[in-house]
Length: 272
Image (cartoon, rainbow, N blue to C red):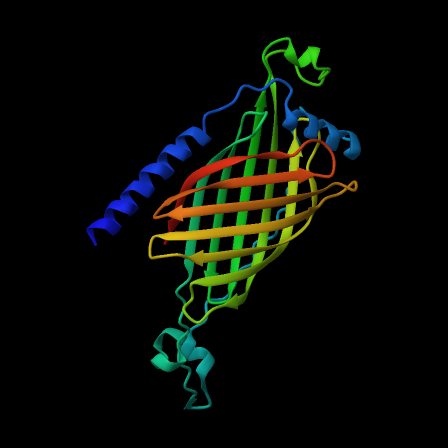
């Protein structure tokens, strides 16, 4: 037991060191994010509006409802009709809802670029779940480097950023008897926007697999395809190892235009 505990402690220290080195930002001068963002912007043929957007609001008339009592609905002609509320039903008829929630907060060091922030939320009950993922890529320019690289869409000393998000409905398609290995099919909607193009939307479809090595160690891998407007698409691959609440891995995002955005990731994986 002492040897096992010492090995786990040593593994956790190694993961912390790997995470620290993975998140050291690299200097970027018109890197892959800038080239990818500009390529998508050219294909989409749109530029983001700098001015404040206008919003239209519609007001609905107030709907007044006459207060009703349960007794009024269930008492007719001197006869009382029995209605049992859900919370007062016998235990065997009650809905057993105990959803599980997973939250990931992390960062990525993008090769040849700067970094990205990553947020993932999953809520699932049995074989059904819902998920949200959101990533912001950031790339800065060092003074006149942007102009020298031919990027005239930004001023000197400025940079480029790109947001990628998705909402999915998750369905568990495989689970072993011990619940150590699970496979989820994920489909939904996605969107992307950047300083070089306005918001574009489309569907997304992917698969995710999790495997528990022990009570605190686990593996997670996923692959996803994005389809956007203007014939823009992307593929994403993730591979991660989790130790307690710490997660480290590698992520690759490749659009059909521009350069791939890839690099090591690290973050906190929390379960509720």
